[in-house]
Image (cartoon, rainbow, N blue to C red; front, side):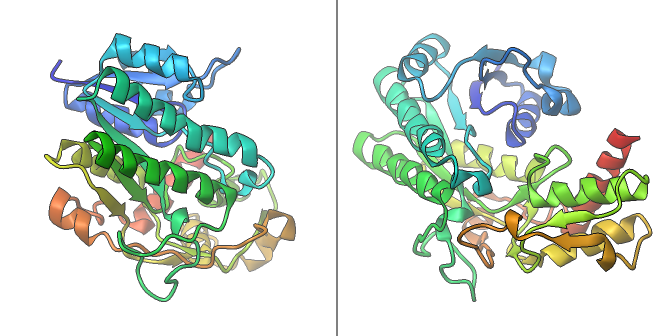
Length: 324
């Protein structure tokens, strides 16, 4: 094995894609999972990595646990992907969101500083840091942060703490400011997957309509499998830094609906889509579009490897296959 990597958040979306990518590069991969009586490994199973990585039970909010794991594993690289990542739930779960998204990364950074200071660290940051700043243009590494949700606020703490440990203790610590990224294993509560799952159910006669929140929202959506390559590339750089990972293209909820419904041969679909204010955020984010030029120039990363249209179509196909 060339290197060892420790990934938190292994049962989420990005962890399995990153593990698959690292395994192909001959890494020894350790994956952190929380203790559940009936753990859900569906995402890892979907990508065929469950039996190829060493799963470790733990919790990033437990400082002693993180110290123990850094001492025992001595990983070359740590990728912190663990989070309470559903923005809509962060208003009701603001304390939990803060403990996981803010204190968790602090525990990992301290564990690295105190036990394995040569370990390279990646922090999963987010476009939610920007809020509604610069909605007319593109957000880049110099755009001011103005988070508009408890989730964004919690991630802002982790972002600056990563920068602080880099500058204070010379740790190789980088932030990836990832804009929205999706895949067939995206959580069902996220709007893109909610749409593709709903379209699949309508196509198969299992549902009559889809109920969504804000139909006017616009986002910069990319493919999770491409974005994990940028994570790895950041960690390989001689000098750590922070990078916006995005496509630079903006799409609306309507665009997702168009592609998904047309892919299954339903062109007149508006009567099948309903809007419910219960699914709208208390403080809405209107539009996000990132400028990935720094990542393109310094990481040799390709933001257009998978097109938006292909990603949504693949998600629909995967949901039809699951439901069938």
